[in-house]
Length: 321
Image (cartoon, rainbow, N blue to C red; front, side, top):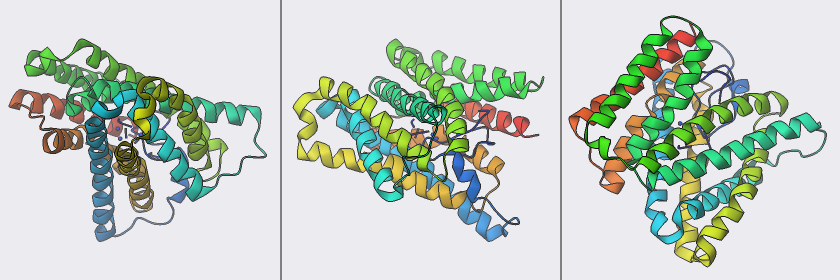
């Protein structure tokens, strides 16, 4: 997750940033970005450019995760999570300067819930990619929002998408991925569960805070939650200049760049199209794992990932039908 920092009320990507009505979120932006979608449908060229922005966002998020994995020998998974969230919080708070007064107790509870979900989701996901390939981790994590979308749809056809995803997971277990570390698989599935919590809290936060104020505040809370765990795990290793520099790079790749690209894309793309494109997150993760971490996959594993991606796309389309 992948995910700031992976936003919707019903269902990919960081990781994750779709508006509250979209079934598959990204870890990078807030549900409140739906407010930026205005006006008539853009032309084909503008839509094509927006598609490129979404793909760029997914690649940035997953390559950020791959760079994070390179940092694990220096600071450990929890240490890298702390660096990512702290730098991301500083970046968002400095750029958007959210208003801190005038909110009710329930508003702050929603933001706190989102912050805890962010911290937990990223901590679990990073511990997963410390043990299993990035593409497999993102594929398993995607099952969380996919299942939420299936259950929220309440349509018989949704069972088809659930069975398709189950077939993909079976192929993962049947092939070389069957030798995946059990703890890593558990962490990835748990990260998917926290992705569901992220989606639900992101929808509430986006409805209560203007613009991206809620996300910025939640990121600060997530940083406060993860920082003690990172310090306890990595200690003074977090102060190494190289580690700090790479941690800042991870924050920019995993939060700053994806959020910016998605914000512009959502001005040009329908939310449903955006959500379908975010279902391609496992493909981006597989590419990042291969190019950065030298994690190769066989044909069976690629078919398994394709099945889960197809199931996610189908669930998105069904839930919006």
